[in-house]
Each structure stands twice: as structure tokens, then as C-alpha cells.
Figure: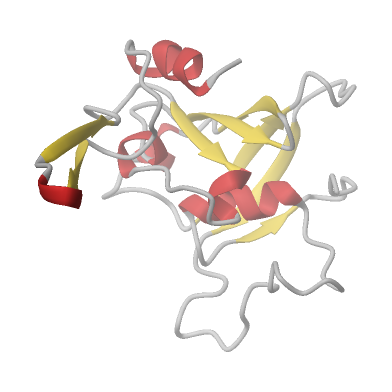
Length: 168
């Protein structure tokens, strides 16, 4: 599926970009005053979108898709789509969001019998702690790609796979 098709399902418009709002590009080469408007996500969507591509700094997903109205995110990672969701609606409530909560991961290609329960501690690596998350650029660090995806929304999060083998 293309990003346009995913965006059509997420917020009803087949737009290429996942950033918030509109970005304007000016081209003032050789006296031209060309202006190009790139359209992104117009408002907060019911469902969200997270991607491993953002963890690798290929592009940025805006807050409108990171903070959906419902605690459900389409995940694009390693050339296919899967879903991450919470049973607790307060996970997407900025004022009442707990610092530790469970997310459930379902990958239709993963041969799973049931969703994988992940416990997320959003403050595990915050400034008042000395520990830092593993460096994704360290070739010795075996970091599950899904951990990197989750940290695009919760940068200081530690992810506990609850006795399930992490998907590497």
C-alpha cells in the first residue's frame, strides 16, 4: 500500500505526507518565484501512524498522527504494516495519560496466535534517570525495531516484552 492509501484510510485524504499542516517551499532560482505547497495531515485523526522510517530520520510523523483520538496506531516497519493498540483510552489523553501502560502489537505476517503485550514505561530514560536508551547506531545493540518505533512517540520509554521473545 502507498502512504496516500494509508492516509486516505486514516484521515480521509490521499496525501503523500505525514507531517502536520502545510509546508511551503520557495524556489527563487534564476529569478523564479515558484512556490510549492506540500499538504500534510490537516487535523488530529481517529487512528494514528508510527513508522520505523522516522526512527531512522528519513522523515517526521506529525503530532496529529502520533496523538490520535483512539489508542490505535498503524505501524509501518520493515516493508509492511501492522497495528499497535492500547485497551486504556487514557493513553491518548494528554492530561491523564499514565506513565506506565500496556500496548498490544499485532502483525498479520508474524504468525501470531494472539497480540503481544508490551509494557511501556514512558519515563524510564527521562532526565532525572541516569540510564539512557540503547543507541540505535551501535552495531552491538540488538534493539527490536518496534522499540524504536514506540520511541518515536515516547522518546524516554523502556519497553518490556513481558516474557515474549522480542521481534528482531
